[in-house]
Length: 230
Image (cartoon, rainbow, N blue to C red; front, side):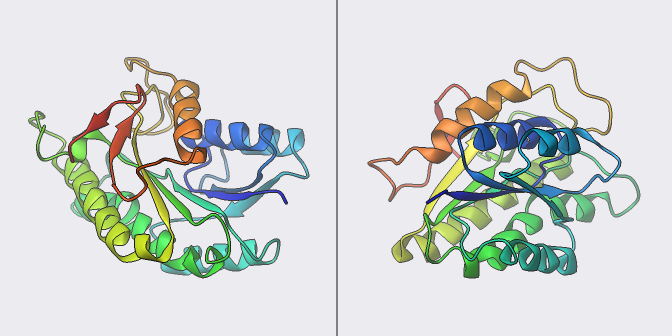
């Protein structure tokens, strides 16, 4: 039977690259789409009309997430893997911190809790794209408070989910993709990073799909297959 994956933040960057890899590998892919005006997913849908489903999704909105779950349930009764890749690095206005938290950390928890009912019979794997920016142990930055705080919050949320759900058979992946030339700052793709989205996505696909002998440990791993304290 074909495995199923739900990927948030699928419009572009690492999320989009992962959609392609999972579709090429024969998975049924549900791609969380936030940017209707960004058309790369439409092109991917044409390449994989039977394998890829586009799901409208704003991870900062409980209503949107719940509607996305219903959309997915119309197509399948089981999601094997959930990948939270949606993320932003900055936001405008006095409530910028709240906006970033709503996507990067609260959004991840919101999506995971909402999709759990359709994951109970499958592979039971929860995957989260985090960052070294959220590591308190190795914190070295002097700015970017909101982004760093959001990733530290994400790491704590994943650890608490791990404590609760690992005894129920769920497995977890916490992934640092490295400095990627992506769209975290807006519609203009970055150019000063070390990795392309496809590089980070390839390692993520490998780590997310392979089983580990040490599933009872939660470890932050990166694009070079190294581990980080978090």
